[in-house]
Length: 318
Length: 310
Image (cartoon, rainbow over all chains, first blue to last red; front, top):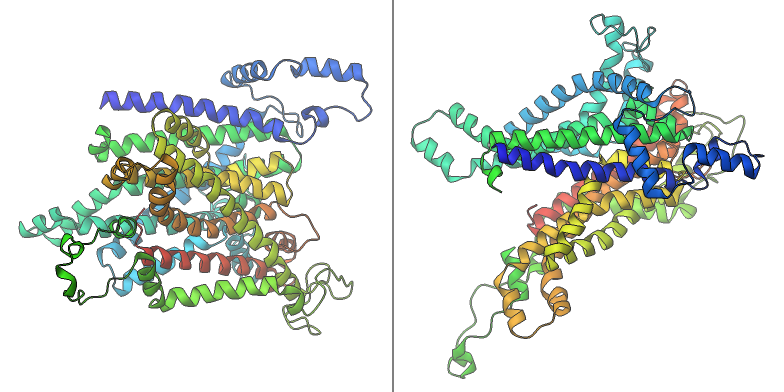
């Protein structure tokens, strides 16, 4: 076990390195000079040279990358061009708000999706299976940004039972999750966020459960006289590893891919920060957010792999 | 898999036949179909998939024939006719915030949205599929180099990567499509690589090599035929994702620029008006949803007809 954990962790390091290279190169994908946003349009050649030197843009790219990486490792992501605040502060606050959504969306999506998939996979071909499969296809095909708008139309415009957007009058610093006045702002974004993962997890679970159910050991368990409930428990445990891999991806999606949903609900999370950074061409924030989110994604996948190998020791030997 | 192989390695006629001894033998009573014919047979007997394919065809036709079908000019603005409900003065689906006819804009919008949905998948299938086949067939160091590079891109959540690339490049339709292609190449490469690695280990490849076939010939005749199934199925399932993501990029202002009609962009601008004409505002999203779900269901139907497991 220890050896597997070590190998898996060592494997994550080059990936994280590659990810940081991609994030660093984002600046150079932008058309024009990255200094464009900092310099006035009438700057003289001398000023440009001085600023270039100050920002380190006169050094060769690999050197620039190493300097940048060194700063990032020390927690210094630079200063936001739009707000003049350190990027690390902006990102960590946004991440806290996104985590608040994920805190509710993840359990909702994982339990609902797994339960739906398990029932459908246990009764393949029956009416309940067709119902779940149909619902799951709807879930994966839904444009969640549109679902968000439709939910706002129904619950905020037509029936006026839930607030449409934002985090409430207190904003993110004073957000009190225990009072309904604040917590009601969570309902629509959480439900919207959970919809796609529910569909994907239900589909994966259905396929995994239906396959495991047909294996010989299930027949053996039944012959041994185990109750259907006990057999279900065995089947669910064996169907877990592939589902866990998908759940890991979906967890990353809930943290990073919520950009569209957060934009719809103007929820001040990491996705919203990212879309603001793109509109303002705020490259340091863009870089910092994407790097943080993708490193979290790498870490989540690492943890999922390790958990998978705990549940299913066969994986370790692979 | 077994069925696909039967297509490629046609069995030699029985020895007795060649000797001319068993020439009068009656043919086997059951008709054996080829792989693609049996896929076609299964598809013809799957009314649900056929129905959804028909809807996809209708959507594509509606987009292609937009100039003939649209009742109004999609760019014609009207100050008095802004944000009108369904059926107002011949505007069957109402008007948008600049008084433009919604039905016409939805028809024209389909062209951009479908193009942005389908083209990146095609590009990714070609490039990713090729990289995957090369990595899988050559193995060794080439495989490691290609697949580890793909792993890095795999480490980004797909929406995030698409938004980051399109955002850094400054948006626009071409950049959006480029970003989506880049997002789809790694998973496509992985599918092709897995399939190729499996095929490569099979005996008939060894046999082909022994009979003197060169690498290119083996790839063309023996590998591609077997890799095509999983790659096609995966590509078809990507179209639905791509339609969603492309409209999402436009929704964020990273795709098509106004005033060009596009479903995602329309949804984003109409979002401000949900208190005035809520149901008109929901239309572009409904178009995205119907397109995406139909592509998804057709892909599911194809998958079971082609009997590919991934």
